[in-house]
Image (cartoon, rainbow, N blue to C red; front, side):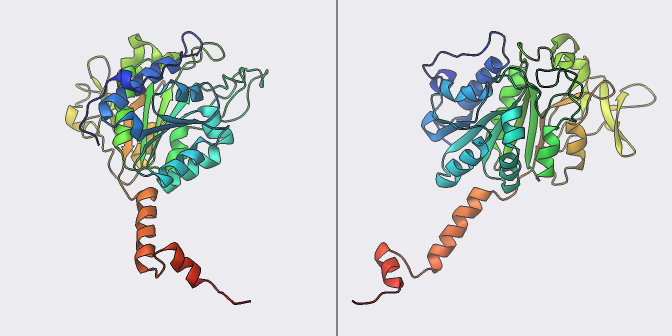
Length: 336
């Protein structure tokens, strides 16, 4: 990591930002500018990879190396970039359609390999660029251009996919909370391995208000919980509510009622290998339970790119072939 300091301006390109007025992507872009500037890694040591979709336009607005790839293939390209140049900090920006539909296979295998890339998933629960078809995260019953009577499909929950692929890092934020978004992106970048950050994002044109139950600042304190490693799982306007285990399930209690004290509240451990509780936290939903924001899982283990470099070095050390001439001499030859 460089000792030089950077400002958000250092990461902004000269391109005019083109999204619909009011789109949540603007807030996500500002959050990534802030996270990158605080990370302290030079733009010249950063690569931003994207697929296809509204979110994937973000590559043009970054003063870094970038690659606007094809639909669903961003994870494959990002994997190749990191494997070819492990010194680069590699980001992937993608949408729920780009990442989880046509790109679903690449996504789960990038997570499974635990290659050191940062995947930021813009989740607006709709296909925006192609004008309003339902996506893999659209809620059952949603009426769209491709489901005029309501989609009958059950949606993916990105956390379940990430954990099912043995993911080591998962965090969540929402577009209107730029501070939390920047904080979790910074934490993702510092994580060694595949990090997945789901940002709940509003599409004002085709799925306006998809996250309205939790996006309003007035209600967010009561309907969301910001998890912090090593801290009690408290939420509410005055941190008067908390989470406890009731058998195998999570339950909301009020501190001060029925003999409940802060000592009874669960303490968040993002670092544990066992993801059982992480999955329960990541899949919480209203009205009974709050939606979890912050870093939910941050477990450290070996990364694909480190093991790849180590394997190559081991093979090279044992090999008798040290130069191109050695390679030619090792092959079968004959005189004519």
